[in-house]
Image (cartoon, rainbow, N blue to C red):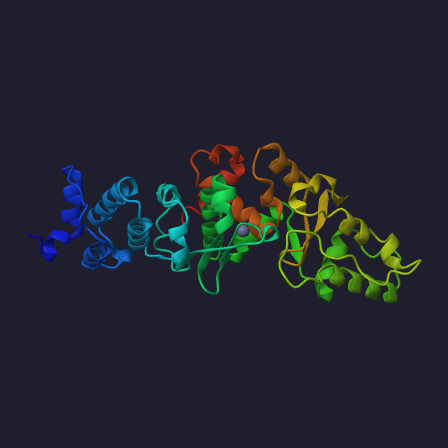
Length: 341
Ligand SMILES: [Zn+2]
């Protein structure tokens, strides 16, 4: 006859290791046994190993994802939304493996990640997000079915966003500028800085400059974050300064999913200029950075903006099969500034 003790994690794990089945263990039993071990931020190596043995057992022997969701959640101290029931459990297994390649401070002990949530996304909204205010990683449900190979890289990418907050602004900003990254908002000083590195206002009058600023802001005039180009400015009469000033060329050459087409974008003084309609920011990056990414088989999405550059390269750095695609310089920077966080 079973007593409570027979449902301790170590007993269950020993049964599995002896080749016995856990057929009569239900979710209540499992939850009870998980409650007996310490908070998952303080798990012993012994408990961790037992959780892995049980996780691997249920992957093979249960049709019910809920066992694996519960074990993953306990092992890594994260809440998993109820939608996890709807995606194949093999994804949790690949994610578990990928976590083993990153420092424990990045995920399981990272208090900036509390939950992993699955939600439906529109296609122009990307495949995932990290919301620092509520400490959530959100993954698009569609990705699991339409782009299954993207799940683990994107998961690492979102962890990258969460880890980015722990790197000093000074370090990351000097790293960004070494790749030519510039980004600013569309307020007066942001526009001023962006036009400045583009060679200045040429001979536009103060009134004409005001019109250019209005036009730039109208391009960002959609409410939702989007990876497609924003609306063209309105009320452009004949002879309007927008028609002949370089910002129109930047707008015209910022295509939908702009990071895929930066080789066609407006260039000046070794920089490539574009508008980021997702973050509503004015952007530039070195032409040599674009070449580096385009020529090394790294996902072009890393050129979406500087924060994406970091998060995407993070995902390559911590994937043992992808790290070699990164330049030595990038690998060394990650080793010094990110491995140690
Ligand atoms: Zn991102």
